[in-house]
Length: 289
Image 1 (cartoon, rainbow, N blue to C red):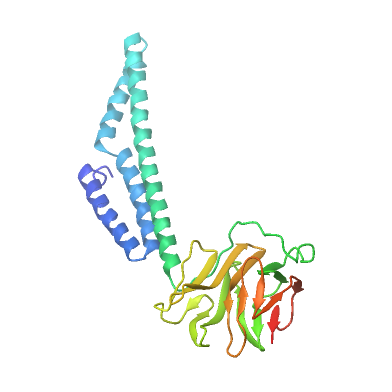
Image 2 (cartoon, helix red, strand yellow):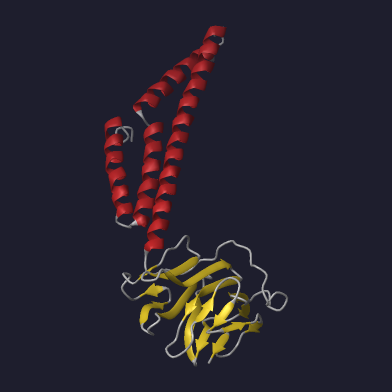
């Protein structure tokens, strides 16, 4: 066992694990990267505890201990043993803590890279954030188990998924679904001003060329679509918490006025829609002709 953890073999193994872990991160193999970091940390600690240096110190410490435990041991022998024991454990624990800290830093870095990688992908379920639910028309009306859908000045609550949130001329414009983990997916078609579909989203998976749009994401709980041509933000969904989803954007349908939703009001063509609360509507939470 000691030969396995010799200095030469220890450095050789770490020299293999480190670039392999980096390659895993760069290739998007984050599960492999996590495993390599944990194995590398455990290997490093093993190399510390079973190193030739600490084995030699352990033998020297035992020798001093035997002398200190002799019936006629001098105070000097006791002092020498006590100092050596403290130095031994100080170095051993210090190097072990260093290995644990470095391993933790690498794990945090891998997690950061994984998050950045996932937010750049053209798919992925939305996870609930930990943000407060703003005041809305459904306060006091929605059951405790319901999810509130905040659409500008309007609001609704739903208890079953999938659910059509917006419908124009009897055609679903925006549909939300939720999986068993409480994550949310969006299905919708996004039209430009010429009534052409420029972005198609099927359960958060974008299916058209991303040269047409940007999808900047700050976190796993938001989904934003910006049309590059006019820098128009046509969709901004935030999964505020497990009980509230906020929706903003510009929703179009051929032959119909644009439905424009921001954080304060809802406009359907020239009409300013008043606030109100709808619960578990059959066809759609909000339907427009």
